[in-house]
Image (cartoon, rainbow, N blue to C red; front, top):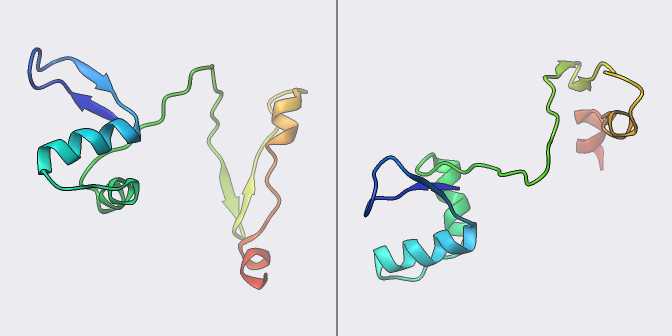
Length: 95
């Protein structure tokens, strides 16, 4: 999650964790806040959550066909072979 530093420099952006966000929001609101509250506000669009990857991550755009993700191999890499998705929505709803 990113939070703009409102005290010292308006242009500086600070990354904070969910537990840090709970502490900050609890101090601002003067009432207890839970992790679920943070996620609920994110789902409602009140706050934006971001993911910080500490190591490089390769992302690819996917296409769907009949509720199935279609990935095109980008090479003979083990990680690309591990990321192939084969479950359909219908098989998930049947269980």
